[in-house]
Length: 350
Image (cartoon, rainbow, N blue to C red; front, top):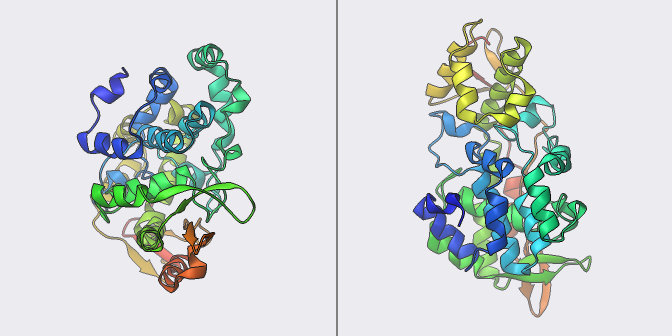
């Protein structure tokens, strides 16, 4: 058995048990590879875990990847799709989508995914395991080819389902408990969408409405002022450290977030360390419709909006919940129309 499961947080273990009543034996060896274990030092919340601006719980990129794999296994019992889900974030660097901010990829937030194949190919252990299991690299290096694993927004797939469930358990906000998660999860089945493709959908309208209502709350939290500010600030801190040759791009893929934060906190050049500590201990940010001079002031207008309009069974047909529920329609429109002021800042000059 993987050492990972022996030391697993009891709440996460219970959550995993909801997602799948079994952990398939073949997963253990893949989870124990260095490339997957590296993900245990990355928090899924893109760095916000490290500031007092938030009250969030720890959930690693490895936790998320395993949870996605378990959802796929639960609904497909397909080894290749399950592994594609397990590996979908293997190219994720420390601070996750903050690196997309560093790369100016605010809208799609996919700038690191192209490294997935390269990382898998270079892993002798993973390639040996794939050979053992008679699986080709191209069958598991792109989870986008499996609609149960991933699909286009706003459809529901395993990745989008997982981060909504875990984020609502406290990774981003405490919206529901494990009983709520089980109620929602047990109501999901594989359905066929308007394009004839397989997609996860709900059996019951009321449960779908409950899910969409929570999703709407999370959607606004993903782009609230504190989050936009923090992600850009982390990106800019890493950029400054990189420009001074104190952190390399390679470090973002080889070091844990805590190791990188230690480098930033102990930086002796300029005011990088001072400003970072101010952010760590901050309890609020400030908003403005106008740019504020002589302050670290962030403006991010075009940012990815994460929302879901799932299928639901209605009168024997599979339809979008937005088309049959005014409650869900209002929640989705609320998510899509959420606005903040143009600028967000803190009282320091970075």
